[in-house]
Length: 105
Ligand code: FES
Image (cartoon, rainbow, N blue to C red; front, side, top):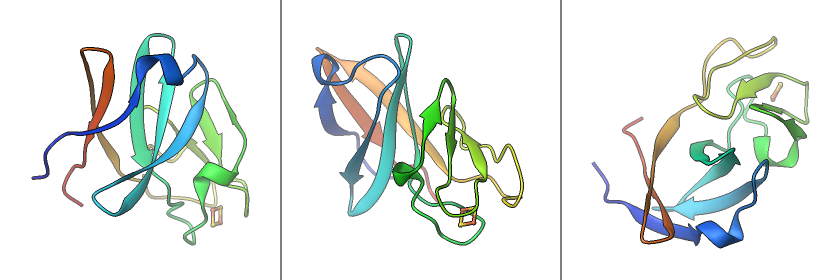
């Protein structure tokens, strides 16, 4: 399993925002919802669309290609045409730094 990687400071990520970050050569989406931070893969499980290019609102992000929606907190697929969840990853905050550790997948 990988180690935690610092990707941003808490001051840089506003509530309700997402940002694309790279961890261990993998592009992932960091999001902040309230005071909590989450991370999912930047990959739509329908046909590999780039989720970070899609619109997001609340806890959901939509794939810009065919509109499948995913939960930013868990990676759960919420609507067709996606039927499989995208991967989610570990996030923690230490000393004002947001850190991500990739899950195996
Ligand atoms: S590639 Fe994302 S909905 Fe089709």
